[in-house]
Length: 137
Image (cartoon, rainbow, N blue to C red; front, side, top):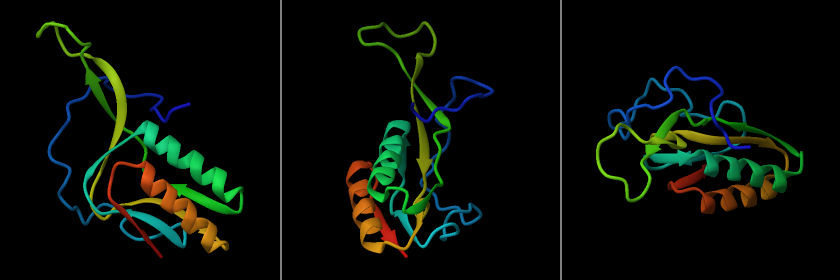
């Protein structure tokens, strides 16, 4: 089970403008739901596979000893044409789903009394996602 939107207005989307700019109006720049969080330091894209892997790893390490809040959900589709296909003939089919991450955004929040376990789990998550992050309290 990957994180994929159930219903969407258009299956294929354009990539849009640059998402590297910091927008102060966007929420999720401070901890709201937990005491420890994972904060993005750079902009980039998180795929649904990376988000799923991080969620599974947090569940496995915490073993129901804490509350996990995911602030990211893949909303943008990335299309790709098959290899060795000539140019033209329309846009390719949807390959995967991504979430555009801005710098300073809180990706995951955890509320738990077991701080060493939470820190170990978040360090493992940091290794598995493709964006530079830091652990905040």
